[in-house]
Image 1 (cartoon, rainbow, N blue to C red):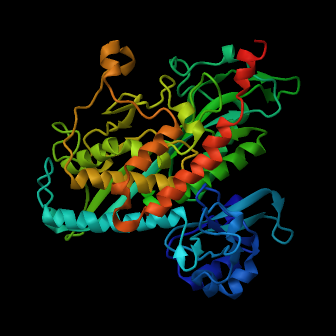
Image 2 (image 1 turned 120 degrees about the vertical axis):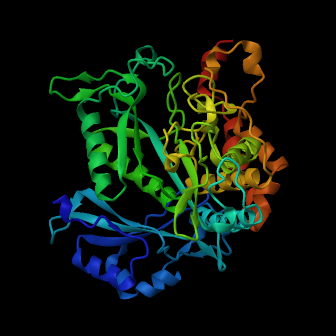
Image 3 (image 1 turned 60 degrees about the vertical axis):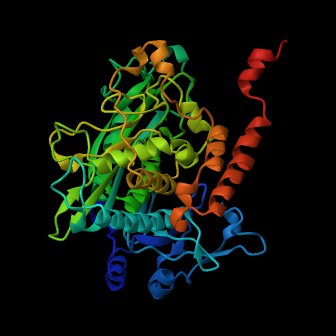
Length: 515
């Protein structure tokens, strides 16, 4: 039955073909215009598909649906007095069909589907959403890189590539999604039962069992049908051994899972991330399991990361594609000068981009020493405590990339990718000299060596102060405007930092209640 379904409408599909496909799939009953607000909430309306078919041009123009922008997080943009926003669809990316496995269409007997269409949020004629920030960033960075390469055609460590021959730049990204899985309404597992993530000899990539295994396999199989090119799903660093009750049902489940899929263009990669999170949550729920994407859901255990892989490719006049991060001699150099420049830009500007990368209070609960958390401002080929890794890819130049280990599932991927790209081009243009990689085990360094290594900010408050003090590189090209940065800082302080400060922490009762 599932093979009869319409899983996606590929990017740039002509309108008449979209209409034909939807008419051939009556189980797709609704259309949802997916606009992303600044807090990463995605809209999920249920618009009868016939309305879309009757006036598809209006949806492309952004005039079909006008909504109240005060109901989404667009601070200082959509106010009570001027709240109307338009939602024009984005035809340059894939549109996915979200099926409800718990509700069947009476006529077809198939699950009822909703076509989720990524859309921009437009207020007074201006795009004001994170997708727009990323798309505008890509346009600006591409223009600046082309200018840079034409003015500086020689690329150190990659003399085979002449910058004057570059005609186009392609940005690709991929994310690794980690999440904790548990049985709902279960007896809480004792922390002593848990496997601390530092001791991972018997945990990492261990066999999954029962409902967890079934849900994980179902996710990989179904997501492959959507065209995500799934690469792997596996157990992560710890958890509790499940129990089996009298009926044979698994109980007391609590373990961490990771799934990976193939890279894609930057905007598409961000869209993929949001869809897959929702899909995974729904599939695991069918198996009686809860999924938690929180950065640090459990005390004393590894948090959920969303390691982000970034790469730049050049298209030359002969039509060939070249990885700009790769050196000609992979054995002699980690990366080309372009790759090192981008990497050093990330390290140099980390504190300023951090509020867009680690965007919540909880993100910093994860970024603490131990638990495989990236807390050191260094890069490495193999050390998990470094904030940046250059994955060992063998001799293939195509696979050379930067793995940014700081983001987590609460990061807005659109703002995260955009900030990272702006930091990267700052490093490339300014030719920041590369540091030496640190491939030692940082946990085994002598104390005096370890404390000499720069560390990530310890809190969201510190990160916002750094952004406030240093953001000139972000405002170049008017992608991150001063108003956007100011609004972001104010929103985070008002809605996340101050409310937390005003509330006593539950642990304080344990410490001080009887004093």
